[in-house]
Length: 150
Length: 150
DNA sequence: TATTGTTATACTCTATAACTATA
DNA sequence: TATAGTTATAGAGTATAACAATA
Image (spheres, rainbow over the protein chains, first blue to last red):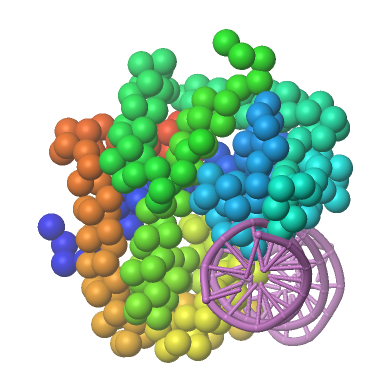
């Protein structure tokens, strides 16, 4: 054992390398559709459900309200989501997927499927399942608040 | 099977969540020592070896020369690395760890060890090994060029 | 002409904190 | 006073492209 551990001694470092590689490849793919990875996550989070308040979305996505506001601005500018007021509480806003956004989600989901499949093709089905199980175990043990999933 | 796959259907998404959680926690820890995660990676890459040319480091770390230059500037400003000219090729530069940097590396390595251990404590030793093996398999299959390790 | 390294510029992502409007 | 949301500011991280010096 050396006094100073190597970078590769840390699983966190390996995770960072693999995660960045997958995300960067996915980023290139969705860039062709004019969106970023963070925009895809917000869009998918809003898809197929009721309108959501920015503050609720912030909790769900593990981001600050300011970051959500900025991200929503970009998606609004692209016409992929809509923002409406809340009659009960005039402070409140609601975010929802627009018609154009709803049309784009399946296209992006397809790209996500392809990206994931091509990346994981290096592993057997059994290994893929084990990897998912281990990642889920880490997420569960560390609590959803630190790593919001839904 | 739904027409539009869920975010959690993608292993890349799970990887992103876990990786970000580990890295953000580590970032908080090393911030107490006045460095960022990327700075730690560069510092550790230079530690215990010969002086390295920025272009070689760029290949090694999977970054552009411009990004390396900017990162090196910050570490130089903090006095943790040194930059010297190359007598053989006057265009060339060499980056190496300074005395202050060499003193800081073991401290940061200790923080990395602790961060990794505390994060992985949720898994058994056996599971930890399996996770490392799976991540290594992905890195190997995808080639070092896309995901430089050393 | 090609290469090394730096600099200029730009954009994403994220955070903190100040601010506005409403409750 | 407290809350919802936005805006201002800042900094990390990264990329592309232009540039200067040298080969």
